[in-house]
Amino acid sequence: DGVTALAVFVQLAAQLHAQGKSVADYLEEQYARYGYFVSANSYFVSPDPAKTGLIFSRIRYGPEADEAGADVQRFEFVRSVHGDTLRYPRTIGGFPVSYIRDLTTGFEMRDVDKVEAEAPLVVGLDECRPTFPVSAGSHMITFETRNGGRLTMRTSGTEPKLKYYLEVRNQDNDREAAARDLEAMVNAVAGELVRATENGL
Image 1 (tube, one colour):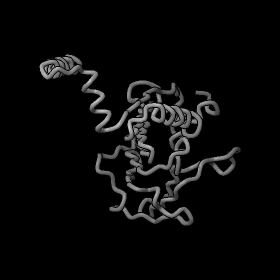
Image 2 (tube, helix red, strand yellow; image 1 turned 90 degrees about the horizontal axis):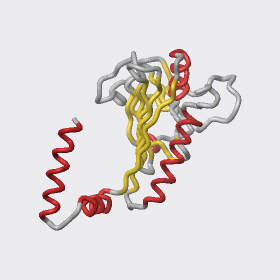
Image 3 (cartoon, helix red, strand yellow; image 1 turned 120 degrees about the horizontal axis):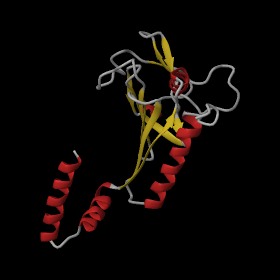
Image 4 (tube, one colour; image 1 turned 90 degrees about the vertical axis):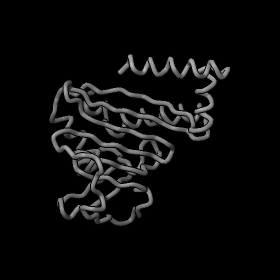
């Protein structure tokens, strides 16, 4: 894949050179057109599968009743067919969650931040069925936030790791704002979602 990408990049650089442009010039044009993107991909070493399962369970269903400390506001999606209530966080790093896709439980919904907070929402099977295949044997959740953030969290299939892939798009090409938002969301992954300190990760 890397060799193929390099070949395509060289072709692009040659075409741009013929037009009197550099790759850097072209990149700036894309930022102006599509916004500025920043990303952070990392992982937590989590050698205990039971603990990893509890971390993802807390993300999906909220904290246990006896858990000390404050928690973020949460959605309440009642799935009568499955007999469960999903309580995903309403914010990540203070930014409203607008989209959720959980390929472990089989849940997907857009514009979730427009759901009323006062009462649980009963959702039918067809209202929240993911377009991608579901696999109950591994964890994978994707969140999008209104600030242009996109976070995917998953377990590794080969290592005892909980991985995350995070990007933020600032459509106004504001690089400082994008960097600030990214940092806030990285901190929220560790502090709000994984609770790395509490879980010893």
